[in-house]
Image 1: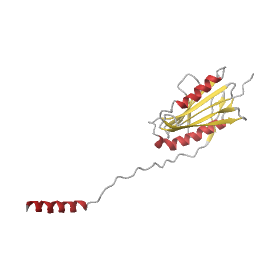
Image 2: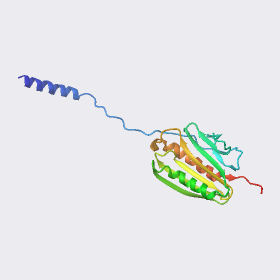
Image 3: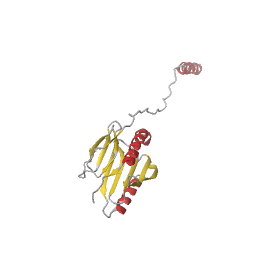
Image 4: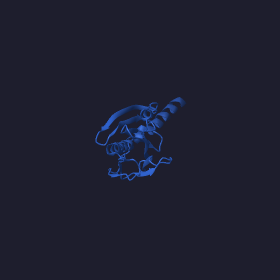
Length: 192
């Protein structure tokens, strides 16, 4: 008899307990990030090169002793494009090897690294743009040279833990700005 009562009470408890609303976890969503439309201006810098930057960016001298190393900061994106400049003085091969080696340092975390050759005969700028996919520290890098006097490199870094899925929109925005830097780069005319 006690066993029958226990079964009936258990069955009633299960019936009433099952009438409660069931809860399911919400699926992960994607952020709808909207960045301001890019508008460009010529960077005012006292260096042997010039280019256009996004008006939404702040250009600052790097914390190094080299006045032509620049930090192009994007406060809203928490990202920076770091620009370095070195004159070519019988060291072009070393500069090229160093610039091509830098993206390869990210292969441990990167899922894929794509390199696109860049040639602009009008401005005498030649180089490569690297897009790094995956949880690498830098999502894009490039170098440009005239092969005679000038060598410039650039790379994107974010002030956050690398997580490719969450920084893709910001990385894509900055990659467009890097491409604009590459397309608008001009070397200063040097008097011989």
